[in-house]
Image (cartoon, rainbow, N blue to C red; front, top):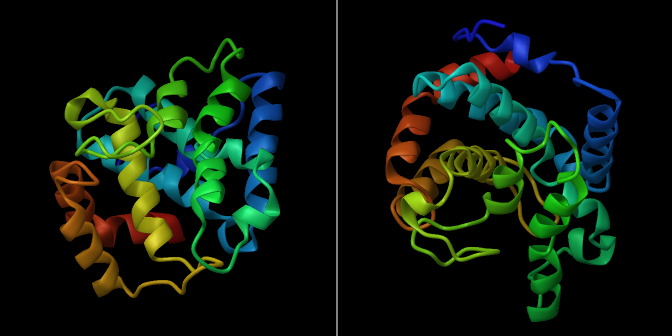
Length: 207
């Protein structure tokens, strides 16, 4: 498959085997627990692929970004609805449970022969550039590039969407939040790239 600027082909990318179909189905089921985010994985996947294309990444990495974007929150299928759908701030124990979704997700998919390239995305998409993230407290470029790409794609979509605990931010507010977090929560260069590509990503997601 040729990596094109218009990534509609990735939006229709089939699973490569039966095990992967099961994983994709589980990932979709995890998102249906939360009506606010049921289309979130596809938007994250396509935005991540677009960023990867602009970076000139190889085809295998673009495929990993798409599959990793679809499955990055698969571990949430084992997070209780009381935590996942809580209409307010999480307490310390609830936050601990929520953070477990990254390692749970990794555990779900790690035995798939085709999953090696997406495991770092699933495990590390909530690491912070300043080292304050989870589950491993990685910082800077020690965070795998594909995980950093999915992280910023995930963040922009989450900020722009309603959640049980807050209303969506408008585009100006979301951009300001991302700019404030550049170099701290997210890779500064990837923030700049995403923001420069917002018109194109909105067009592709609507295609």
